[in-house]
Amino acid sequence: MKNDLIPFYFPKENIIQKSKDCYLYDSNNKKFIDFEAGVWCANVGHSNERIIKVIEKQINENIHHGYLFRNNLSEELANRLHRIIGLVGGQSVFLSSGSEAINLALTISRHLTGREKILKINNSFLSAYGFGRLSEDNNYKVDIKYNDIDSISKINFDEIACLVLETGGASVEVVRFPSNDFVQKLIQAARKYGSIIVVDEVTTGFGRTGKWFGFMHYDIEPDIVVTAKGLGNGYPISCVSICSNIVEALKKKPFSYLQSHINDPLGCAICLEVISIIEEENLIEKSNQKGKYFKRRIEVLKEKYPNIISDIRSRGLLLAIEFTEQTDGHRINDYLFDKGLIVGFKLNTIRLLPPLTIKSSDIDELINSLDEILSKLN
Image (tube, rainbow, N blue to C red; front, side):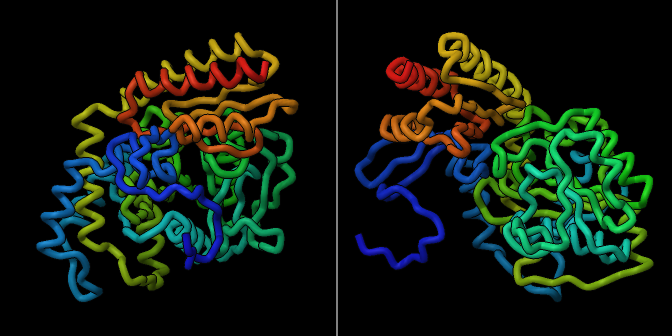
């Protein structure tokens, strides 16, 4: 078929026709089980009926209104997020993408501290552009080696505006969870020198890890929390939430930030429904339980094929299966796609972030298909 799109990425030839819950259907009506939740967004399932009804209602009222008005939906969403995150006296702003929200958090940090550098763990993503972009010529970014406690003392925190902590990202090294000791010592050092603590919950938020947010697996009180992806369940919306101390600091040293879709009511209406669905359908506990079931099933495969599976990493429904160096992971990934199973694949590792609504029978289907291909490679 003719392709008028810039080839920034390279999809399969399949044309997507529709999506529902954990399933995608192409133009040939082939069914796929989506273990990536789109791009890790559809936590409450694709084309969720409750969200569809909210969208239908809201587009008949107001989608976008510009800078001269406020809307109750953004105020209500901010209040609910502050309750969930634990930000008493906090404030939020709603934007369009995770990268945009991260860069606003970085801008706030640099503005308030007067410093330029951004500290991150070397296997975390940060941003597709701006101050946090992954590029060798990015002089603003300082990397610290994952779980290397000794390297903390080598960081010049006097020039660090903020520490950006991602507690299990899926992008760079495919699902790794920093140790509690490493995180605590890193935060202590950052706090000592006045660096702002930013937690990046773009991937790990909204029940993905078996808690509301990934940072809740650690004893952390963040200054800024960045959310996206699961917040809008596939609708492009992100959020920067700040604690009361940052609120007061910005009152003393304010600055202006505007973009076209700031605090748009349609996105906020969707996000309010996402939060309600997660709460009312107990999806965080289900994420925790299904994640444990998923891991147990993978562990059985690891025992059966120790020369093929080298590592399993999991927290809630954020999982990775790493293969040994001699294993042809590309063949496994292609086999699963042909069987109608969508997984992520990078660095000879399968990445699994299904919707929180995933069924045990769907998990079983993936495990059985993995067993089939691994038996052929064994």
